[in-house]
Each structure stands twice: as C-alpha cells, then as structure tokens.
Image (cartoon, rainbow, N blue to C red):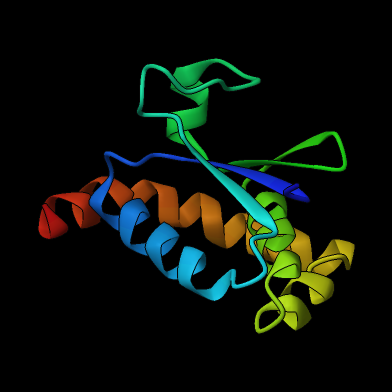
Amino acid sequence: MSELTVFHDGACPLCAREIALMRRLDRRGAIAFVDVADPAATCPIDRRAALARFHAVEDGRLLSGAAAFAAMWRAIPLLRPFGLAARSPMVLKLLDRLYDRFLTVRPRLQRWLA
C-alpha cells in the first residue's frame, strides 16, 4: 500500500518528465502517482485546481505546492533530507515562494518542451 498519493498533470511535458524521474527514484513503491489529466482519475479536489498546482495527500492531509513536493521528497530516500528540511516553516515558506514564481514561467517552459 502506498504511503503517499501525488496528483500530477500528465499532459504537461515538464510535469511528465519530473514524475518519470520520481517514479524511477521511488524504488520502494511508496508513492501512488495519479494523473489528473486522465478523465478517469479520481482526485480529492477540483480537477482544474489539481492541474494548476501540484498536490499530494500525506497521512490523510491534502498538501499543495512546496508542501506537496516536500512530502514526495520525504518518501524517496535519496531526496528525504530535502523533504525533512522543508518541515521548517521558514524553508517551506521560501520553497513555496519559489514554486509560485515557477508557476508564472511554467507555460513558457511547457511550450519549449512540447
């Protein structure tokens, strides 16, 4: 049984590459990856919101943005130190600001990778 569920946009070339890497690193199978671009996928939030921002469910809690990334990192041994560092409110706040800035350039990056 997976310990963490990650919701991602499989139609986004950038997201697809990142999730492919995370799948390879998740050798324990600790993460259930759900492609919310698939109409058959079950998602705990509005599909449009799920496609616009990265989400995960850890221990029954819905996480968004940097907190969701940090949860994913904690589930992967190689990245666990980064996920643990993000438990610090200051670190998480900084990561969330960086993620928000990334979201503003994401459409351009998607076009380059398409």
